[in-house]
Structures are given as C-alpha cells and as structure tokens.
Amino acid sequence: MKTTELRQPLLSDHGDMRPVAADASAPADRNSIVQLSPDHPGFRDAEYRARRNRIARLALEYRAGETVPDAPYTEEEHGVWRAIWRALEPAHERHACAEYLECVRRLELPRERIPQMRQVSAGVEACSGFRLEPVAGLVEPRVFLESLARGVFLSTQYIRHHSSPLYTPEPDVAHEVVGHAVTLASEPLAELNRIFGEAVRRTRTAEALERLSRVYWFTVEFGVLREGGEVKAYGAGLLSSAGELEAMRHAELRPFDLEAASRTDYDPTDFQPVLFCADSFESMYRAIHEFLLRIP
Ligand SMILES: [Fe+2]
Image (cartoon, rainbow, N blue to C red; front, top):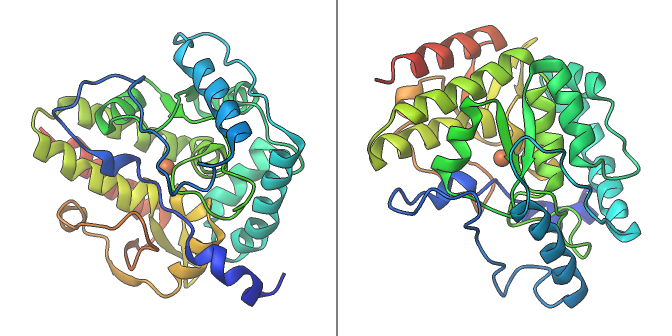
C-alpha cells in the first residue's frame, strides 16, 4: 500500500486515552465505563453497537479469576485485524525494539483471525505471570493502574469499527493485544507494569495519581529508546499504531527524565510530538524501577 493511500486514516490514528480520563473523585469501579460519542465511527451502525453491547455484557458479568468468555467477532472484523497487521508488520521491523520483536515471536499471535482473550492471556501468563481480564470500555485510571499490581491487565475485547481499520478513538482489542499483551510477555516490561500498579496503590492524592499516569503514558504507552544507533519503540501506544510509529520519527526527543515526564502534559487525541528517549533498554528499565520505588 502506498503511503499516500495510508496518510488520511493514519494521521487520525489514536493514542490510548485511558489515563487521561483521570478523575480521582470518581468511584473506583471497573464497570463504570465511557459511552460511545456521536462522532465515534460505529455510532450509527446498529449491528456494531449491538455486538459491542453483547461484548460489554461479557465483561460486566465476568468475575475475576474465571476463564474469559469468547467474543463474537464477525468475518468483517477479522478483516480489520488482518488490515491492522498488514500495516504494522513492516512498521515493527523498522521501529520496534528488539525485546518487543522477540515477544511477538514468543506469543505467536494469529495474523488472520482476532485471537480470543483467554488464549492471549494464557500465552502471556506462561511468559511473565501476567493475565488479561475483560472490561467493557475505558475504566478510571486508578482502577486500571492498581490492577497491574495484581498482575492483571484490564483489557477491552471489542474491535474498532470496520469503516476505519487504522483508526480508533479508544483502546480496542488490537491496541490491547498488539500493544500491551505483547509487551507483557516480556518479563522486565511485565515487572515495570506491576511496580507501576504498586506505586499507584501507595498514592493518596489526585495530583500524585496524575503524575504517575503521565509517567505511565510517556513510558509504557509511548516509550522510546536507543538501540544500535536508532530510536526504537517499546511503548504499547506506538507499537499498536502504524501511524504513531511513523510519526515517532518526527517527534521531539527529550532526555529520559521521569521527573520531567511526570510534569509534562500530553494530548491523547493526536500523534505525540514529544517523547522521552532512554539510552538503552537496560537504562530505561533501571530508571523507571528506581523512580517508582522512590514514590512514597
Ligand atoms: Fe494502552
């Protein structure tokens, strides 16, 4: 596919909006979710909305620790999954860090059909002990981040609307699996997610939660590092979007200062113009580890 054909949908590709829904005063409930807005690509598709509701019900009725029920995907939706991989595989070869590429091989994700969450979760658990559990949509940041401390990644199960295979305004199964599940198959990255959750559990104020959400955003979601003289991605928001990976090459790279990252605002609705770049995978791991353990 030519770049020009891709330009429009890729330019509107998403970042993960989960941490920005931050509202520390909201009740901590994994079942309170954000509704589809009228400008959502699937808003006028009654059949899509009915399927989204069925999938949401699976999550609402789910109890922690049970086997995750299978989602009813259509052939059209499996086609969306194929289109996403077609755009992503060459982008991964160029821009993904070595640890990510190794984890993709380790998980052996199907490229032709959307894998069911119970299968992906079993694969991740065998690698790092992390599990995926379903949620119906965006959940409050504290609920989402604190579950990481238990080795549980709360994950949406629906897929974006077929009218825009390379764009979604919210996290969907492609972002969760290709971005997060793959990185959680890495022991060091799974460990960082876990200590993020523990650090969030220790916070008592909205401000402290917001600062950690920003560090999560600039590392787990949009982290980059140097490898073999090139800038490579280890963040799930970058690795699940061909558009973000392309835009990453034009971002302003700042030194890997997590104190600064915790005070830097971001716009989740556009490509990220500012990224914090570590000197290597090892130095990224050490810096995040030390930063999180210092959180009182
Ligand atoms: Fe995400």
